[in-house]
Image 1: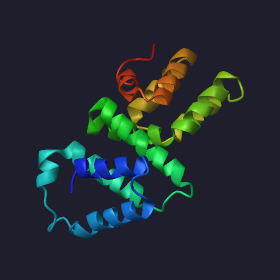
Image 2: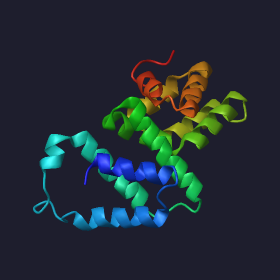
Image 3: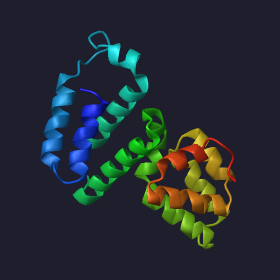
Length: 173
């Protein structure tokens, strides 16, 4: 099994062609075929494409975890992850953005409240510190002014994940 096969499964799940039970059955097959223990594990996929393999296993475990109560929210999450992968064309960038993708609605709601003065700068920084976002994303967010945060949320909401990923690679403007 590889990332391309998982993407096909998640795509079918995201658009409703595959139900949760079928996705779970496919994931169970993936996990059942994986050798437990490093001495029995095949390192070839990790040697050939470590970024793809890392994203593959992160997504397998993400979607194998207890299913969300709201299947529509889970389908939205799958669609968002795939949109990021398609936009960035990078397993590495998608893996790095995954924490913010999973937290997108909450994050943008916090940005809106911060800009409206409901959440103080200290409160906003506290949320960022506890977010689980990658260090370079946290650093960018800590230094971003209101316009940069608004642009980021607009990009995330519009599915412009390539632009969001590129923004994190330079100082907020």
